[in-house]
Image 1 (cartoon, rainbow, N blue to C red):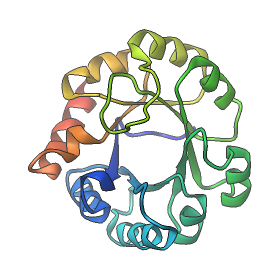
Image 2 (cartoon, rainbow, N blue to C red):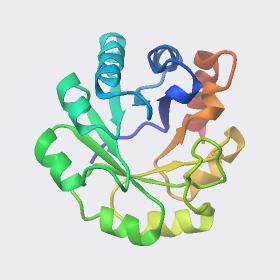
Image 3 (cartoon, helix red, strand yellow):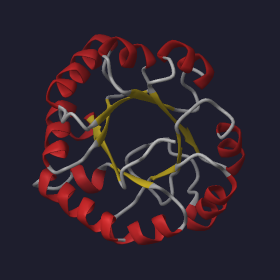
Length: 204
């Protein structure tokens, strides 16, 4: 079973150059970074992922959002898929057994179905209201997060509106890891804020 760090950091191009963001996240101690650029073409995203891989620490994991082709050709450690992306069964055939695959879910039914797939972790969200995605699904909430975590076997990454003070409740609900975007990337010192989150999440 995949060992997820408590902090799942996302270098989202909505907040700047994902390469620079990823560098700051790694400097702060993040060891799992997803490169997310919803507007980039394949070539641009490929170049960004290759740059991130060039300076990622040896013990770090770099995942690509959505694009199985970019993950494969860049040599990234895996891909994170949404409900409308390439089905996980085909992604696994393409990427093989040694590449990590994550999958987004928003309901108990989706999570139960995802638990049967050849994937490594299941993301559940949005746990709280979020402004990161304009087309976000209905808020899951802590009660349903706990229900989902209690029903599936794969590790859960909670995502969506998770602020520093909400981390204990999210982890207590059963999530193995918290995915964070704006709470890290909107700060003046991303590296310092990343260290603060890692230290806190590790002590909860």
